[in-house]
Amino acid sequence: MAKSLFDQVGPGGLVFLRVGLAAVVLLIWARPRWRGHSYPNYRLMIGFGLSLAVMNGLFYSAIARIPIGVAVALEFSGPLTVSLLYSRRWLDGLWVALAATGIVLLSPLHTADLDAWGVVFALAAGATWGLYMVLSARMGRVFQGIDGLALSMAVGALLLLPVGLIAEGGALFTPLSVLLGLGVALLSSALPYSLEMSALRQLPVHVFGVLLSLEPAIASVISFWGLGEALTLPMIGAIALITIAAAGSALSHPA
Image (tube, rainbow, N blue to C red; front, side, top):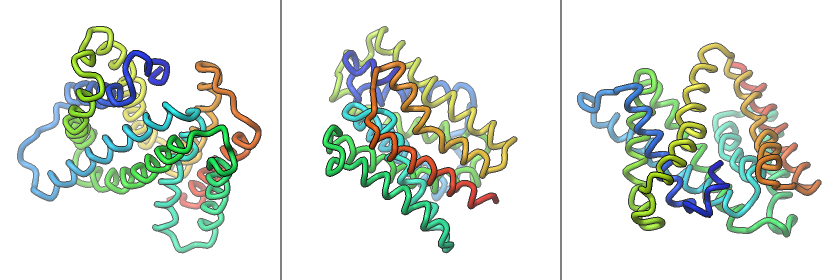
């Protein structure tokens, strides 16, 4: 839905609408308290909000240039890197090697059809996703429920406001833009983040991780069905390698 709207609202404007309107929804829902937190917790909140803003901005810049399924697969490089950094087992090295092979196959050196900047943006989004995961774990220890997510989303929205205004100006706040942005915010941030939290309360972490590893494949199918984004056989093979690596990494960490 977001990519189909880029002709009306560019990536810079749409990412602000996504994060900003998702923040409004989460703040109304959670009604977190702003005051009474320690200085380190405020600093953590700002860092988490910054990671949210940068991650989403880079990802939208990527899918504006390359197929969504490819961008999602490349973005998985971040969580896999975090997995390697937190492990000393040789098996994790195998999963990272598989993912690295897939990433190399998706690089412009091997796939001329892919925009080089799109690949760079997707990999950078993966790096910030890895940082997001680390900060998310810390947020969960110091904030209750989705309070930390709601507050950090609001911080991310404030950080993205200048980007949205520079990209779109006053057109960002037309009724149509706000309505479309609300749809994207609900479908891509407020609803999935809440569903993920509900799933994690009822599923073992490694099962959740395996299901999450299906994202590149699901994204490829949906973008083909909704946007007509066809993939070449090497792209499909590379996405499969990254998906297997993500699933294997999740299975290797059942705790």
